[in-house]
Amino acid sequence: MKATSRRTARAIGKVFVVSSPSGGGKTTIVREILQRVPRLARSISVTTRPRRPEERDGRDYRFVTEQQFAALREQGGLLEWAQVHQAYYGTPRRLVEQRIASGWDMILSIDVQGAEQVRKHLGERSVLVFLLPPSMRDLRARLINRRTDSADSIRHRLQAAERELACVRWYDYQVVNRELGRAVDELEAIITAERLRIQPGKGGKQ
Image (tube, rainbow, N blue to C red; front, top):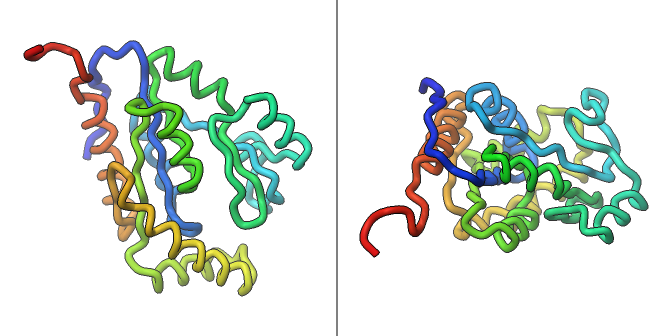
């Protein structure tokens, strides 16, 4: 699918939330969609978890201490936050609000707890997309093959995945990540459709 730069004139942008179980591929898909879609920016989450060898601070996450995270939370600096797999994650509020106020759209790669908070704070300005693995067997294989988690960690992540999959029903869209290119195409189609959506109160019969 060819990317399009067409968009309706909107004073305020939207926030696209992409969630998936750990190992579901959301990081890769968000990276790909940012290469295709104009006027779409990624929010870099803050986290207290240890940095993995291939990760860079400020590019993949902002790595902070638990004390720094607590200070951000208490000062109202986080749009959403959650504790996931014994670590804290959160989305800095200021950048998101500045970007959507200027007409850009933002994309967040966050878990189901964070998605619920974003919906509560932003309402119709938020669009929730759940990225599904083809099967739990496939998800387990992905977690094993990425070689970043212990056997005990994989077991906990799969248990969490079962709980997270039960939340799909209150998301706006679901995309099955069976093949990377197709999943990116479908996410792009969702973004395009939302940008072309007629906002309530704009034209039509009153």
